[in-house]
Length: 133
Ligand code: FES
Image 1 (cartoon, rainbow, N blue to C red):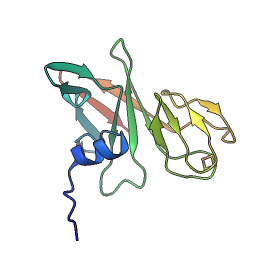
Image 2 (image 1 turned 30 degrees about the vertical axis):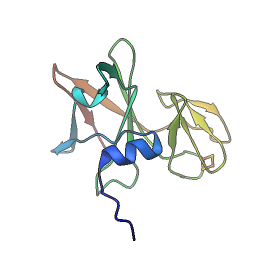
Image 3 (image 1 turned 90 degrees about the vertical axis):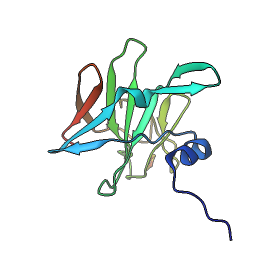
């Protein structure tokens, strides 16, 4: 029987999602901005999305970084019937009935009618902080 290591790098390569690490401090999730950087060969490229998921989180949070260094965080719970969303092609996708949401959480395609739950984000030079999760 094969034993799979529980590494976020492996999860990333299998699903296309990158699960970043974070620290919870008083209800605020601190994520290093370095989580959005990826080294490929000799190149350093920026990730658009980092997903964070803790043991106590029923759904992950998808954090999107815009080209001009703004961040948006959304709960990856479909507002139609509650399925967990995936990310592909730069948007949130629902595997259950096909709803799609843009990186800011707005509905692009139904049957979902409500936007995703979003979180306030603040940042300093090194980290971003996801509030109200
Ligand atoms: S639960 Fe997502 S589209 Fe139905």
